Length: 259
Ligand code: SAM
View (cartoon, rainbow, N blue to C red):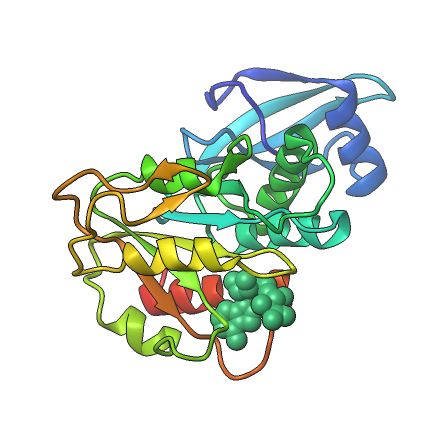
């Protein structure tokens, strides 16, 4: 169970209505049962349920069972897609160790409004299910142009590109130093539009993008002398759904980095 409180052995933890519902109705637990608690900063603790009623409960923290360890530094940037598959992307990215989830609005994004609160709840439930020690951060949606214009130095953006002329993801990943922070970028059902694709290509790694040559929605993406940071990667010859592409590429990154 993900809690806000500090995990101090011997301390009592009161459980709110949502938590007691999850423990009673979903996990079918009762007084005397044990459960794992995480809070995103102290690791994992074992607790014993002292009381579990309809609207409230009490757990006694017994002992720490896993020390805190930071999750991999892996961002998933994804164009919001239709609700069910959007939920799937958030859930699977959480299971696959993403530390930050950024919905990115592109020209062809046609999903409805992104309710960040709902995505955060999905990320929390997936965190509890896969026994992560930290919650992934779910950011508010951002325009692609702004995401690229404010891109942090040193982080590589792996753009999942179905165009067919991108190197395969595995060999591209193998060429990256373990130490570099990674992000994955997945397009919408309709793909990236030509101006977005050109802008992303112009920001390719190892290329000094020329100022003013790549703009998206009128936003210039490059300050003079800024190094490129985008690496286009292919996930094979077929056109994958966005949620499939997100899971596939995150799984490759997770397997290659082993964390
Ligand atoms: N442009 C696609 C088309 O022609 O139908 C539609 C986009 S696809 C449904 C959604 C996203 O998944 C793409 O923008 C891309 O990020 C990713 N994707 C799909 N297939 C891929 C592949 N074979 N290699 C890399 N990325 C892929």
